[in-house]
Amino acid sequence: MLRILAAGLFMISTVQAEEFASSDELKNLVHQDCGSCHGLTLKGGLGPDIRPDTLSHYDAETLTTVVLDGIPGTAMPPWRPLISEGDAKRIAEYLLQGELK
Ligand code: HEC
Image 1 (cartoon, rainbow, N blue to C red):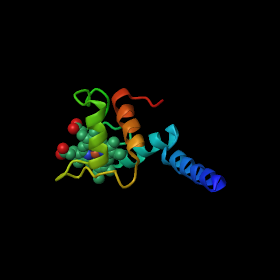
Image 2: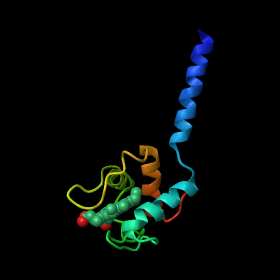
Image 3: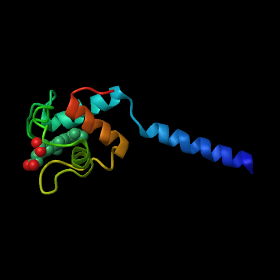
């Protein structure tokens, strides 16, 4: 019984660890996937400039919601199906600060 429980816990922790992308993976995602609309350097394209100075009116929480749910009625898509909430929050912080810890 205990062994089954331990195996279960191990699986849960493995799954959670996989949910979080590495900083490099997240940066790639932002510049490639977000960049396909916002420009590789994020200074705008089809989508607007999303560099830190432009986004200063956002707080991290609102920005996380924009990333997860997109902006309905516009070309800005929801990323909830593809990224975890934790990673969306890290992306928001990356966009605000211009660096990823
Ligand atoms: C299919 C194109 C497309 C992709 C891919 C895309 N966006 Fe957008 N995004 C847009 C458009 C278009 C807008 C402007 C919507 C509007 O009219 O308000 C926008 C708006 C935004 C805004 C709000 C900007 C502001 O000044 O209010 C943020 C932040 C943002 N996107 C972040 C991201 C992030 C982060 C990603 C990647 C995870 C991403 N976008 C991927 C098209 C895209």
